[in-house]
Amino acid sequence: MSSPEPPVPPVSSAAPAPHVPYTGGEKECLHVSLDRHRDVVLWKLEGLDDEQLRRPLTPTGTNLLGLVKHLAAVEYGWFCSPFGRETEPFRFDPATEDMAAGPHETTADILAFYARARAAADASIRETDLETTGTSWDGRVVSMRWVLIHMLEDTVRHAGHMDIVRELIDGAVGSYPGAN
Image 1: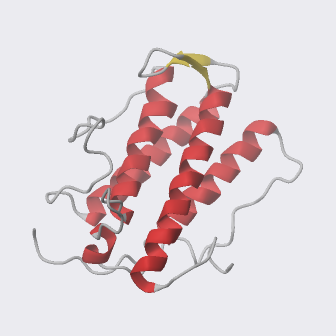
Image 2: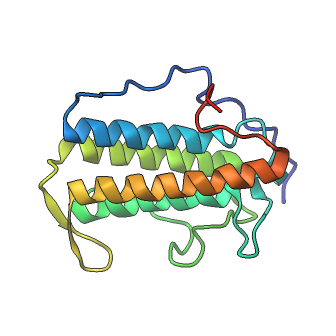
Image 3: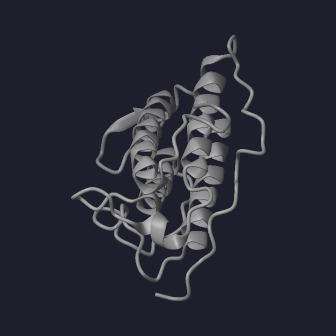
């Protein structure tokens, strides 16, 4: 592995919480909720060094950086591919290598991959009606509505995993920057 990377700088705690559309439309509410939890995923990395981000803290090897890599891959896999949108080529096998950061992958690489996946997914969400359907990687016909709900569930689930892993690393807790 190359020289240690510096701790991840703050990425979201300085920014105000995203607008919450308490009376917004369905698509806006789902998208904002997804964004909020995407930001939590990044917040859980703040201030940790490369070793801490890669440290496996479960028998299956769950670690913070691997969870971010997985979320990036599934953002592309659910929001882009089913709707015929372009995705970047993966430099790993998403079926077997998406939950672990490889020794050749830097923290910056994985964070940039997640940022690109989010941007591509956001474009797909903006430009695709909730009722529009596409075909998923396993042949199921899915609507954008279902994908938004599914990805919100997946992101929240993994943000919860990250809560536990982060607490085990340094005791830090909280559900969102500024909230405990």
